[in-house]
Each structure stands twice: as structure tokens, then as C-alpha cells.
Image 1: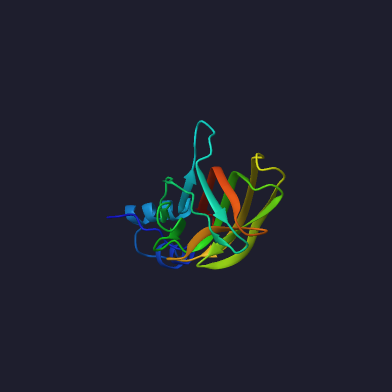
Image 2 (image 1 turned 60 degrees about the vertical axis):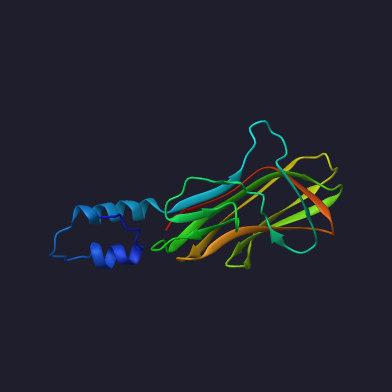
Length: 181
């Protein structure tokens, strides 16, 4: 039988409740193990030689960071680096998640870039801002957040600049998620 990712409430009230008279099966133990280990997943873009991988033009309104090109290891989370550039929580994965984003990039001279965490197409408070002094500067930026997520929730990152037609050239970036509660 397949291991099932369960919520904390389900584990405490259905499988391992006080005064339980029924036996605990091997599958119950496996469900407990996969549930307490937590769902995880990620999408990324890397170049071992350190070369720029992707160049885009962005403006003053938020747009999805769509330079991801690899689905990282995942369990209980669907990683999509090619179509939607997001992470989707799987069935039974309800809980609190630690979300981490990092990016090294260069851009237009004297431009300000703002990144935001997006949950189900709604901007969240988490994000970061990076100023690029000259177009040849390669800067890094990152943020972390903890969000309550349920099955089918999606998480992505959006970016905007302080004006129209700004260069956004990525070198390395990643979006990772891990259930922590």
C-alpha cells in the first residue's frame, strides 16, 4: 500500500489517538514517517560555468519569474519549471511551509528590482529588493517566508523594476519549499 502524507490533525485523531484499542499497522508507521518528514520541492536554474543563462525585459508591473529550467527533487509537491514556473502542494500536504528564494542577476544601470512571493496569484508580504548600480554588476538577492498552504495551493515569485524595459539577466536562481508543521 502506498504511503500517505497526512495532516497533523489526522495523525493525532485518526491513527495515533489516546486510548486507541486497534493495532498500529506498518502502513500507519510509514504514513507517520512521510508525514513528519514533510513534503518538499524546488525549481531552479544553474550554470556551472557561471555564465548568464536567461535574459528578459521587465517593466514596472509584477510578472512571473520564468527563467527556471529544472525541476529539483520533490515529494508531495509538484515542481513545474517549464510551464507555470511554480510549486503546487499535493493531496494531504496541508500545513506550514518554509519557502526560500534566491537569485543572482544583472540588470539595467541604476535600476531597482523588487521580488515578491505569490500564493495562488496573490502577492504575499514576503519579498526583497535589489539595486543594480551598473549594468555589469551581478547582484544577489533572497528571501524566506513561512506560509500556511493546503492541497492545490501554488507558490511562485514575481519581479518588477522601477521603470519600463529593464534588463533582467539571470545567472542562478532557485525556489524551494519544505513543510515544517
